[in-house]
Each structure stands twice: as C-alpha cells, then as structure tokens.
Length: 397
Ligand SMILES: *Cc1c(COP(=O)(O)O)cnc(C)c1O
Image 1 (cartoon, rainbow, N blue to C red):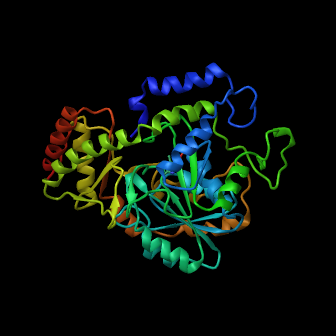
Image 2: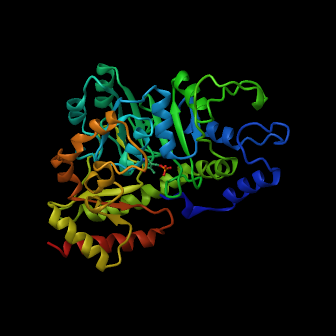
Image 3: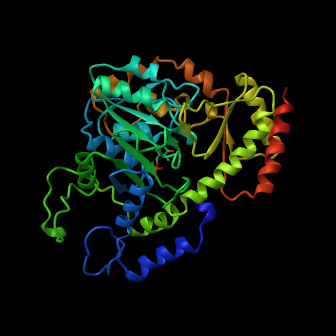
C-alpha cells in the first residue's frame, strides 16, 4: 500500500486510451466509444479477483458502503452495528441513509468482537458491518452465524484488506455485500473510486440502479430509460476506471511485495521482548498492507512512538491519538455537529455516545502500533528499517 508508488506506463496507456477515444462517462455514448468500456472491464476483472458474481463500481469507498447498505434496504431508523476502530467513512455512510451507527468494541484482531456484536443487537438492528482494518480480518464464521441467527444483513468493508483471504475466500467476498475503496492511498488506486461486491443478484441490480440516479440501464438509449426507484449519482468515470484496470492486473505483484516487506519487519520485531502481534483468526491470511503489533502497556507504546520519531522511522501510527480512525477523537460525531438538521430518531439513537465507554477497545488500541507497508521499499531499505525499529523498541525497556 499504496498502489500509486508503482505507477508505470501500464496506467498511463490505459488513461491515454480513454482520452484518445474521448468518452469519459461509463454509461451511454455507445456510438462514440468504439468498444471502450473501462468501467465494465474493471468490473469483470474484479469479479475474477473476488471470485464473486457481481461487482458494481462507484465513486468512492464511502459511496460503496452507503450503496451496499441501501441496496439491502437499510434506511431511516435502522441500527447498523460497526466497530470503534475504523475510518470516519463507516458512520458517515450509515448516517447518509438516516440510519443509526451502533459502535461496539474490537478485540485483539483489531476488528469487530463477535461477543460485543451479539450484545448490541436490538429489535431495530438491521445490519452488521465488519471492517477488515489494516489488512486483516475478524472471525468471519462467528459473525456470519450471528447474522444468520438474527436475520441481519452482513456487510464487509474490505477497503484496507484487498488481497487478504479467510479460509481461502477473498476478503470482501464473504459477507452478503463487500465494499472496497480505490482512493489515492489504497493498495489498488483509481485516484478516487470504490466497488460493491455481491453474489446476490437483487442487491447487485439495486446497487447498479441506485448509484446512477435510479436508471434501469435497459436498452441502449439513456433518454428512454425509466427509474424504478430513487437514486443518486455515485458513478465512477472511465478515466478513474482506466487507472484501476492497470492497477488490478498488478495486484498479485503488489501483494507479493507487501508480503516480503511485512515478513522482514515482523521477523525482526518478533525477536524483541515485549512485542506481540495482532491475532489473525484461524484460516485467515492477511493482505500484508500493515504490520500491527502491541506493546505491554499504553505508556510503552507512546515511548516507542517517540523513539521511532527520534530515529526517523515514519509511516507508523498509534491510533489512540488519531483523529480519523478511533472513536476517542470523534467529537463531531458524539456532539452531532451537522450542517443541516438531523432527525430526532437519529439524535436519540446516538445519545449513548455521550456516556458509553469502550475499555476493551482502549485496551487494544492504546497499546497498538500500526506500520504501513510500502510497495516502493527495496529489500535493503526494509532490512535497514527492521533493524532500526527493533533497536528503537529495545531502547525503551
Ligand atoms: C478508505 C476507507 C474507506 C473510504 O474510502 P474512500 O474511497 O476514501 O471514500 C472506508 N473504509 C475504510 C476502512 C477505509 O480505509
């Protein structure tokens, strides 16, 4: 991560192909496009990658989450269970539909704790959204059985875990609906873009229509298409899809580089007393986009972060202090600072955030350090970094 580190002629040629032909929109203009369908091609490629029947490209990962939930009929007043450790996009996408995000604890996988999910289910719960943070995953069998038992829609945000697998299945293809982001910092980038992945044909058709103003996409005359239901514009452009098309063909190469770099760092840190690693559920294989490790307590994690800074080791974060990824700093959500009025139903539904504490999440996040694995590092650079990191951690004990 991220894919932009390895831009090459492959991306340039795909983009130029779109510009030379001149049709930047993914729908319509059939007569002008001379067989150029980059978004459709990318969808077909992603269906192979995710071993799924249907992929609908959209304009972002945030849009993908919102479109996925909408496609499954999640809306006003419905509760969606999600983790405390994620990206702000998770609750944004839920609230965009007038639904209520119900935040619950993570465990040592750094993703949803199945026990916390089960405890949070109410008669209003409609969906569970797992977020496969930092290249790894939750116990998907446990979450799936909870969703089956309670008749809940199971959504999988795999924006940070493309290329990872669980019991041989690609992450993002396991739940009822999977979501991906191809924003500028993801393993595969389009600049901006996202995808909804599903084996459910009804959900797919809903996503296809909803993300393009409710258009039915029947026939070849956009003007004659009807609107079976209301939609929005969450379309991807041909230019963005062209970049993604070149990138996704390189996914196996990207994952192999990530794995090599991750393994060097992990082996070096495994020899340092006091360092432990995040738990990967049985049958899971990470995408190796990040290396996550724990220190014995929050104080030593802070000391290690300071030692990293002193030694010029970048791209590592302690998310306890982070504004984007952890509940602790999301005052704009807790205080509901909105530009426009929010329904009383959602307001009441979010009151719990004023008082609820998340000790279990704090316990893991405060001790965690998460290091981005870059694609552009040479093996020599990773070895050097590994040595420096190990030395910096040892220095604090
Ligand atoms: C990046 C990301 C998103 C949102 O993707 P955008 O394309 O930036 O809207 C959602 N969830 C997670 C976990 C992400 O990392």
